[in-house]
Length: 220
Image (cartoon, rainbow, N blue to C red):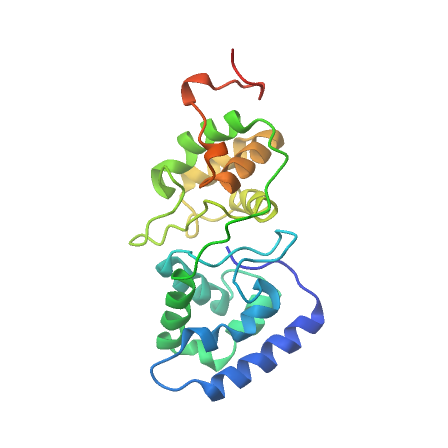
C-alpha cells in the first residue's frame, strides 16, 4: 500500500517535518499534523505521486493503515522511506497511529488516478471478479473489520508493482490462495487486472461480464 524507493533528500525532510509535527501535537493526537512528514512523498492531498508509483492513501481503510504503519515500523514490511518515518518515537504511540490512520481514511480518494492503457479491460474484470472481489468487495473498497485494503481507484503503476510483490508474499501478509493465483498469472493478465482496478469507481470499468472477450476486444 504505502511507498516506493524515494530520493535520499526526502528522508531528511521527512524526519525534520516529523520532529516539528511531534512538538506541535497535543493530546488528543492531531492526524493532520501527524501527516506532515508524509506530504514529502504522498503529497498534501494524500493522493500519491503524479507518476502513480507512490500510492493514494486518502480514503484507505483505517484498520489497514494502522496495520501497515506497524509492520513498516517492525521491519516486517520493507521500504526505506517508510521505515525512516515510522522509526520515529511518535509511532511507538498507538494513539498517534490511530489518529493518522483515521485522518487519512476520512479524506476524499484521488478522483483521477493514473491508469493503464485501457487494453484488455474485460480480461481484467474477469480476473478481478474471480480473484479479488471476494475479499476486496465487488467495488474494490475493501473491508474495515478484517484489514482488507481499498484497491479501487489506486494508481496503475503502484498496483502493477504490488501485484508482482504480492505474488511472493508470505501467508502472514497475504492469503495463500491470493498469492498463488497472482503467481500463476501471465504478465499481460497482471497488466489487465491492475488497469481494471485503477478504473473502479469510473463507469468505464463497469463492463458486462457476460460479454468477456479474452482477446481484449469488444464482443459482438
